[in-house]
Length: 545
Image (cartoon, rainbow, N blue to C red; front, side, top):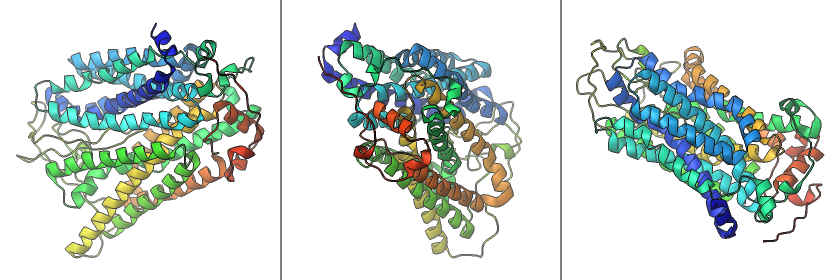
């Protein structure tokens, strides 16, 4: 009935598609960020050890990885709209489990379920919106998902701060994740199930570019992703290359190191936490909004090239600065013999009266390690916890530098801060939104869900690899060389984008499909091209309302 209402008012279709994309990202970002504010009260209420905290944080990643393995089949078999609605139902169940949890087992189960839901929804949302709208609107509307993620993170900061002092506040933190999911479901009820239904009702054909009218197309299996048929192998290389380079540039770990850099430039305690959360959040919002304005003008390829180049320069800059002025990382959770500290908490809070420093977010494909503003609550040991204090770890530099004056050190630390801001900004208008936009465009409709999920599974896997190898890399080659290695990887990613990633702006999904079929080798995409020079046959579709 809601669909009929939307069909009779076509002017509502684009706003409804925008709300689906934005609210989907909002749910994703909120669910990722909320744990950093809830972890400290959870630790106090349940007396969680470091291992238990890591299990609680990592359970969301495990759920997301499972969804990326099976979600593609669900999306292709039951449809994009049904997959989103189903994921929202699963998310409600996970939020309920988290809000009412009385033990660690229920908390882990709730996080596992929530991770599965947001991963499935993220894939289905990008595909669903990209199929319903046309070339001129597709870049902006799909990129709204990334903007929603950023807004969801900031919303979680605000609610975490407001609820931190209330008894059982963490239950409300987890419960509020259901609100944007419910609003998104209401918007979905006013939209068609997909391009097939839209074609039958003759309402969305002018928008989606004629893909729904292509009858009798061959079906694909998952193995076809590695075959030369319709250049599927080339498409898979583009998709896997983007998601893997997105993570191998060190994006999960640079943000995890943000609180250390903020402390280095003199912002300590509460002021450091506020600046880290609000400052980095504001940078991500501005950069993502910039991407929304440029993705359909400058193009996907141009944003990827510019973003990757800036990431290479900025992360290398952090590595070079740490050669001259190594920064103390502070003790980690693993260095503590007791269980009175949250995992990964910078600063030494074992001393009486210590103020809690910002907590990192779980390492994920969209946002990693961003701190959240804490309250000035002092840590009270749980009865299970010991009273021993933690030794301070040495700095993560490679060697002790020559003594420098205070102004020189201040300049170097501020340079590292600027480099970190540039890195966050470059990711937010490059790899962040554009990777998922390109993935939603390059595959045929029959296998789009499974192909997107296949690439997404490599995204989560490479993210876990990069996150877990960070401390081992530091111990082997030092922090400076680790960041320089990330810079070298970004340079390789820049070459990959230039050689293999095509420009898809201004083309319908049917035209992009024909473009890939005409080009047997992905390398031919490396040269600049305009949509007028692509040898495709435009599909004419009559627009009758």
